[in-house]
Amino acid sequence: MSQRRYQARRSGDRVMADGLAGAADEAAAPLLASDEPPVVDLQDSAGGPFVFLCEHASNRLPKALGDLGLPAEALTRHIAWDPGAAAMTLGLAARLGGPAILQSYSRLVIDCNREPGLPDAITTLSEDTAIPGNQDLGPDARQQRVDAIWAPFHAAIDELVEARIAAGKPSVIVTLHSFTSVYRGVSRPWHVGIISSGERSFAEAMLSALRRDPALVVGDDEPYSARDNVDYTIRRHGFDRGLPHVMIEVRNDLVESATDVAAWVERLGDALLESAAALGLSPAQED
Image (cartoon, rainbow, N blue to C red; front, side):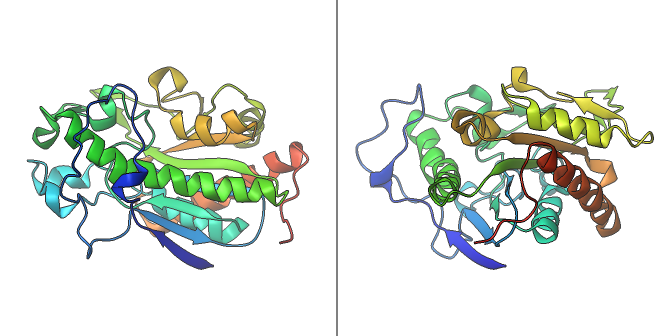
């Protein structure tokens, strides 16, 4: 598996977010220093039809933002990232073959699974935790995060997926997430949830495959759905291109150890292969 890293695009390649007009004419100081990790981690591997994506892979913050006014403990929680999601993403890419693209910075900087103009793209309140460093941001500061973090992530996916389409490679967009077992005092019974955006054929196949295990509680558009604005990545890179797509949510208390992750990689890998076959996609494609 080869590895490529994408730095943020230079300010001249700005991607303007809806509702964020009025950014300063002069470029602000860079959000990321030259010695900080690149925004996008691309693990590129030949193999099957799957393109694995992980928007909430990391809880890292740029040095320029300090700790956003949060205690260290808060940055270990789900508000900052999706624990276990990166490990599942890399595990599935290794098992099934295919590229994996992971975001290297916390969703508290900007959520790459949101339209960048939405208020919760740079949230000031995550669950019940206030984010002091995100409060009272002006348009320049918001746009800087779009340019430095959000835009390069989606540009890397665009480049990869368009190259696959040009080469005639079938592609299934698969995003990996995890969710909390309790949200604002309410227990969530699902072990795994399957979310789609508009076109449901691949999601329906995944639901069918996973529900054959009587021990699993499988959510259909649970614990989130497109109504919650969580479908940006699968919509932009899957639905809008007419590609099969699915967003997978695994409860994060079920992926706390390497053994847990390995079990879910096996379970989800089997379901993905079965679902691809149901849609007539070969599990392995030659380069």
